[in-house]
Length: 211
Image (tube, rainbow, N blue to C red; front, side, top):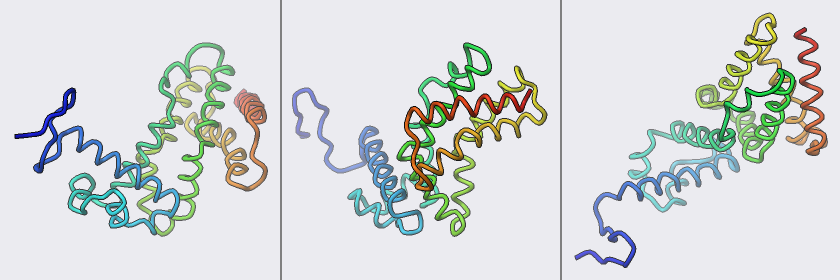
């Protein structure tokens, strides 16, 4: 007979894990893999090390992920989901084009300069040449393409620049590039006040160029 604790579900003895337990195992694998990937790098992180830290067998690992590249894709997907604002649509509505772009630029900067986003960027710079599959995963899972698409639609409707997708890419570069480089150690990181001022100036400069 199964042991039952008041208020709890029965304790499972052997057999396949419950759906909740299976989800917990997957989350534990992702938590450990995220830390190892961002700290030690993609090449130095092995499935064996992840399984050992997660206290699972390799068989259990392969029930959930095809290989290390599949796991990395899941890690990137989860990181991006955490960085994405909970309500994206309102960012693109309400106010003038300048106000919308300023609001968007500030949100983009906060996400791009978060600790995990910077660690992921360092990982890509150091590992992408040896492991080209990482660039494919980032292109597939990354939020950049989604952001460019949203910005392009906004510009097409209100600013009408030449080559709308290219203009959207340029806007992202103007907003992110220098603050990100400085946050990565190539200069003094910007303060919150400086970042807001940078976002405002980047929007003004961009719109003047579009006009």
